[in-house]
Structure formats: C-alpha cells, structure tokens
Image (cartoon, rainbow, N blue to C red; front, top):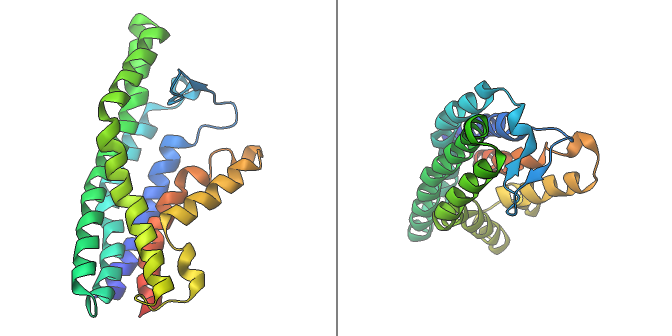
Length: 216
C-alpha cells in the first residue's frame, strides 16, 4: 500500500508541476506590474486555455501528491503515531488550501484581462492587488501548512533519525527544491527565468512519495 501511495504521490507532484508551468511559464520578456509585483505583463498574450487547464490539472494533482506524504507518514506512524497524525492533518489542511491558492492564481489573469478590455490597466491592477490583500492571511497560512511546516519537520525527522533515510534525502521536499529552483533563476539565463523555479515546489511535493518508497 505504501508503495502504491508513494507512486501516486510522485505522479501527482509531476502533474502539479505541469499545472505550474501552464500558469507561470511566461518567458524572459515578462515584466512585473503594480506596486506589489504580483501582476505579469505577459498575461495579456498568454492563451486562456492555459489557465483553464492549469486549474483542472491541479484539481487532480492535489489529492494525488497528498498520497505521497501520507505514505511517508504511514511509515512514521509505526513508531510515532501522534507526530505522524498531527503532521498529516497539517499537510492535508494545507493541501486543501493549496488548491484554493492555485485556483486564485489561475483566476487573476482572466480578471485582469477582462477589466483591461472594458476599463483599462489602472483599474485592473487596483482590483487584482485589492483581491490579493484580502486573501493575504489565508494564502500564506495555508501555504506554510502545505510547504514550510511539513518540509522542515521532515528534514528534522531525517536528521534526528525518526525517519530512516540517508542525509542526501534532505533534498526531497518542496523548500529545498524551491531554493534550487531560485538558484537556477539567479543565473539570469533566459532558459531558467521560469523553469525550474516556477514548478520546483511541486517537484518537491512529488519527492515525498519517492522518499516514502526509499524509506521502505
């Protein structure tokens, strides 16, 4: 069962990476707009189907990559049931929020484009930034529950020997994968402007399933 869940988790994380690429692969010509820097100039040129399919794929990916983390917690549960249960709950709440976050990000370009057509860019920028301020607290709280808290906890478990995996497995989480992606982006090479940084966290979520299989 753990192997099956781990494989499902890997596939789910890879699907989530595809969803991220559809949403965020904008190219080196993209510019950030607005004082908050959350609006992309390339939204006006990107095909609308990309945002639609990004959200559809994420709908499938979220429960699938959750299986990989649950598989890892099933291994931990044998010796530390309370910690495994608490961490599973935190992750699953974050995963539910993760789909909400992704849906919001997919809606932003459509809202922006529609307002530009009718009323101009200034209003479009103001609306998007106002919406983002409104969901700022749940956005980052749920992101922390999905990405940051589980990642650092799992790394601590590996270092402390609670999860029996070699130390090089510390890279198998979304925080470290995201840092690696940002290092690629920091090279300023056009090929690394978007990928792998924009989908690195999803690859880290896929890595939980791989880590579960390794721990067996």
